[in-house]
Length: 220
Image 1: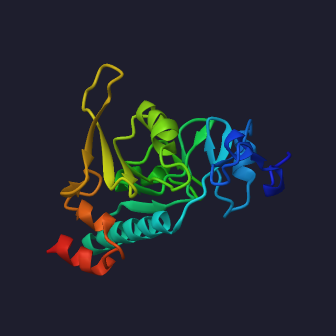
Image 2: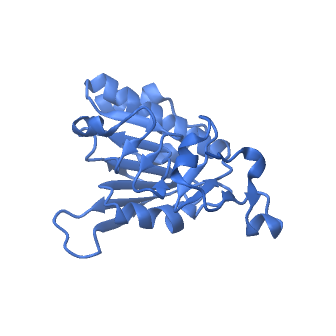
């Protein structure tokens, strides 16, 4: 079986037009080839293509902050949920295995997690906009997440200082399965971890606040 190497990366049209920060794309890759990639080569498998987004320090800092805060909360509460970070695939079908920046998988669905991936949607998916293509989550991933009926989605745009929250409507019968709200400030909770909350303002602070300090406020 032939696997795709980094040397075979094809620059997409935006690169050819002179934008070196555009995502790298390798089109028409099989699912077997995607899962044969070496760990640490963080391409996402989106619609049969491998996609790699350049990310910066702002994205990386928020990813670490949110992952650590959620993990510490789970540990402090003795909850059985699992928190994953970027690089762990969420397999939705044979052509879609996106790697959300952070995922929360509730205890009753942990049996769907294997060494290499989660089978089906997570209970909470968090995506953080990248400087290179801040709308890729909205234009490419969000429609597929809605189709897969992910129960809760946060799309965090630190450049616009805005969080888009998508919640699955209970008992929806039409295609409008999610309701959307936008937050620039205020308290944000999640059904995936009862009792957890965060102040949206924490996400815009420079430097980001202490994880332990935020955790103490949440637990208090």
